Amino acid sequence: MANFIELRESRTDPDYGCPPYERDIQTHISHGVINLDKPAGPTSHQVDSWVRDILNAEKVGHGGTLDPGVTGVLPLGIDRATRVMQLLLEAPKEYVCLMRLHRKVDKDRVREVFGEFQGKIFQIPPLKSAVKRELRVRTVYSADILEMDGQDVLFRIACEAGTYVRKYCHDIGEALGVGAHMAELRRTQVGPFTEEGIVTLHDLKDAYQFWVEDGDESFLRECILPMEVAAGHLPRVVILDSAVDAICHGADLARGGIAGLDDSIVKGGTVAVLTLKGELVAVGESTMSSLNIIAAEKGIVVETRRVFMKPGTYPRMWR
Image (cartoon, rainbow, N blue to C red; front, top):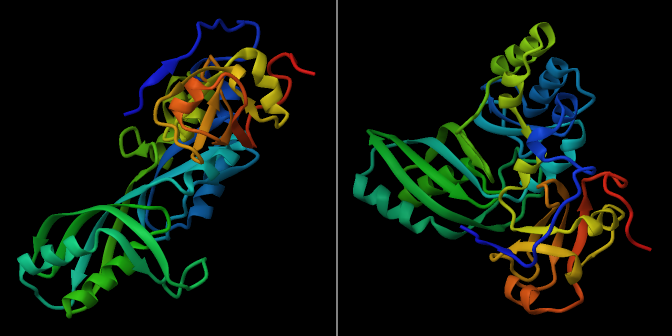
């Protein structure tokens, strides 16, 4: 868990910007993300289309595609928040999988092989995949067997983005010498999104109707979260009001514009750049670690890579 270090006492101007959870409902929707529980059957793009129709939104996009038969956490971005979904493509993922062995194997042997398939592993993407089929290295952070019953093995896996669980099951079957395949799969986490607070399509439809028909926006605010949540897995750099508009125009962040930061920043890592009110301004690549940023008196500390806040949201205070 990162600790936040305040570098200077700072006050924010109440006339500009807005804390994410205090946006008016229309802005909340257009700058919102949904932690959706994808059902089995539709493609991720079909789910996007359904949610767009439910909310009468211009566009909806997802972070991390799920195959039609896979269920679970499917983060969605609405309108202006669709670009924030890109931050989740490289975020760690977690799944619960039911693997079926093609013949019975001693349980101790299964556990032994699972232990071998953790850390750095080699994978060739399956035939039906959206990427080039070449040998890749992926990291499995943990793979824990939850239950074994006959030829069925239920396990939880936390892994690097781009890890194919279907191929993981196949490779374990090969190592066991009996063959295996993925029978069922549910995604339980994508970066900061977990099964806690997950909503269904029915939840979202009902919440929208409560707002439209009864003027009750409380349920909709429970279903739709501020887009800043999608950057919750990234270390934070909080900037002064005077630096916000320059970053919105694509400028890199200098040391003098920082109000505080997390102590977990590493050189070359991706960081979220936030206002004092907690609004997401941009993401960028840190040019130094937290300790070096704190010690520095001047210089560029974050190279801006992607801007999310509209220029003019805060006053221009740069030349």
